[in-house]
Length: 493
Ligand code: ADP
Ligand code: MG
Ligand code: ZN
View 1 (tube, helix red, strand yellow):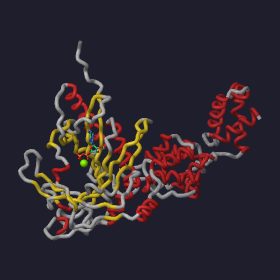
View 2 (cartoon, protein in one colour; view 1 turned 90 degrees about the vertical axis):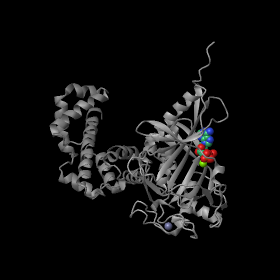
View 3 (cartoon, protein in one colour; view 1 turned 45 degrees about the vertical axis):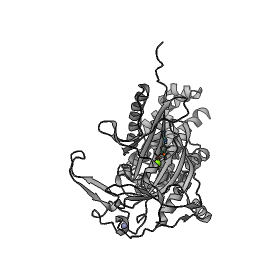
View 4 (cartoon, rainbow, N blue to C red; view 1 turned 30 degrees about the vertical axis):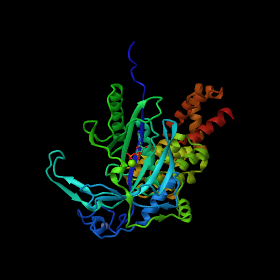
């Protein structure tokens, strides 16, 4: 008998995401939170430098942003919360401790729904709490051979939110999707800039493996250093393979922190993971406990915008769009707003047409890193353009060409007047005049008697040959919809 090969292994993933909050000032002092601006160590004061005797005070905006986030993630907001000291030594943390939250976080018990290729699942959010960022070490030269390091404390004390998920994910694709949905929500509600590359949004992935069907969780490994969605996916793929092989070979998996080495495509052991009790958490004595009144929670809840998932749902339910289109249009709040304004201009019966334009031609011209807010063709301009296509003034191809030309020109186009002016100026107006059309149509019927006969006999496809003949006779100036209507009237009416 051969030993059972443990191929049926399941991975378990939980993410800890850190998001810097878009506040003006730092978490516990009045220093600017714009840590990339200004000379190294210029955005510092006795509080964020951790000088003895300096007293912290909490940033109210940061607390409100955290509650805003927690509500967007369906969390409960307890009435009582507090800050705690998490003690550890690191050269970029001059205080010797980080002010964080331990047993009374600002929020808990939320969830975020994810959709991987139509498979919807719910990821529990354990908690969203508030803490402060550390400074940054810059190692001179290569990190492995460097003999000196520099420290920049501008980032020290920047408000940092930690969003901890339940170990509810099972695949790297789910983890990537969770990260993408989370980023979408954070950017949408205006609390974070979503920049994984610069580290204002960071992800630590906890992952373990177990034989499928086993209830107990396996020993988890924490993977750090992933600064793109792709890296989250790749690092987890690799780590799951590594752990699965170890499990299959009966090797022990150590609880540790590993770093993702993008260049080599592997995770590398960094340190054995510490436990909560190693940090000697205790209540921060320099800050009063927080009482979050129900009025405050209600106000922040009322200020929340319609969220991306709700927006997508409304788009598909009230405008009849596919789930796929609706999701694309809700990828970004400005894009969704733009689309809705186009729909308002063309009418909801043409929502699908508007969606095709926004997802297609509009999305294509958006420059990398430049949102739709900067696009010169405003929703009113696009709506006017689409209407001129729908009423046959210009053809679909002409509409698309004109759109490209207008975007290229960079000049603002916001309404019907501007669009009509452009159509006129470029001689694009299609002929819809009946007597003129009739001459071309009659000529086409005479030239294509078989097609005319086929169409009269009920063959719809035959109209294509006739329209083609009209287009040829008119030099492309005849309005397609008007020609079709006239052919139908004449041959079938
Ligand atoms: P720690 O105290 O080590 O930070 P936590 O219990 O706070 O551990 O969990 C941290 C993260 O790890 C959470 O996102 C959680 O979902 C995830 N996690 C916990 N246990 C496991 C496990 N066995 N496998 C995978 N992820 C886990
Ligand atoms: Mg933790
Ligand atoms: Zn300061």
